[in-house]
Image 1 (cartoon, rainbow, N blue to C red):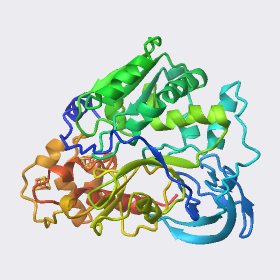
Image 2: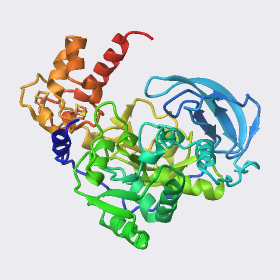
Image 3: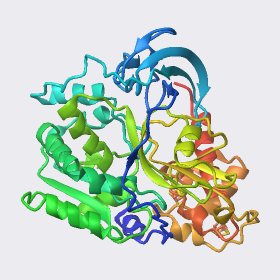
Image 4: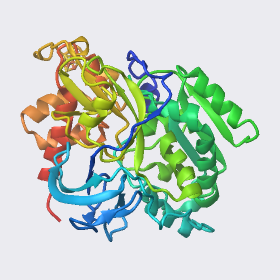
Length: 440
Ligand code: SF4
Ligand code: SF4
């Protein structure tokens, strides 16, 4: 990506925010009668169950793991009995197994839980893997892999992403307001054990003045941490955009942030890291935003992982109307689900249930070649041309159009007057390229 492209990306798309729940203090949802813990909740190698049906487990006890480094262990969020190991296809279409635990409602903690002993980078990375942490705001990339740097001496910057540029979602905002000190403590840990970090940027969209103020207060005696208010325009939280906004550095095609000396972490992930180092309690629950006109009482809630969405909705007063669309995540990049029996995963940060109000069905029509999608794309792609190339299954053209660069941000579909389903097309086009690549 050229410098010109990145500067263009700063335009973004002005989306309506609907941050209805920003002042709703996080409530803690009691454990449900059963949790369903999928063995794939991360990028990388799938886990396999380490428990069998009939085993008794406690809160924070390991239930699934993998001997590959590029993976992340799964822990029970309730105490109780393993009642099933059942097949499950997750919303991305990945076939895996669920460890189903029937809660005894005693919530007994696993005896092996203790703060990890960390004195060097190797021990820190092991502790991060043991915590079960994956990127909590995105694709679920295992955090210990992200922090295992090939050339640590070249990484001098940490960017903490609290942009929360998706409409509706306020869970990261609540994290700042309720657990802000943990964010700062997490930053200190990463700074101490990873790379040669000399500067830290905390990127927050300027539509969250209270969060900016709180972070400035918490960092006033730390000159190396800069709170960076960013103009509120989607997708400011995109990794490459945040890095450019913070440092002016450009992450080109085929590069990762560490190649330009930067690590990017989500604010909730870094706060969890600090909590884990203090308590040793692995990732077993998640703060999420539940909103949308089909929900009776929208809330921010802390939910045991593996809780089914139907139980979460029940905790929020049930459905006000039959949802027409349900999303795991925000309306720009979230994944639509057709069934509310899906369980909450590590990287889910919202459950949105849209009713009639948000889902006026406008049929898709032929492209009128207005060029709006091209102007909206942060990475200077040509979504309309990709759409045509995909319909023609023209693999060479798709390569030439650099569809692999698409981060599926949704800006193109958002501005398209013909309501073309451009993000879906891009996803399918990328899959077509993967399928047509020579097998190794
Ligand atoms: S979804 Fe892809 S093509 Fe569309 S605007 Fe975002 S990066 Fe560009
Ligand atoms: S925004 Fe929609 S109608 Fe306009 S060029 Fe792109 S695909 Fe075609």
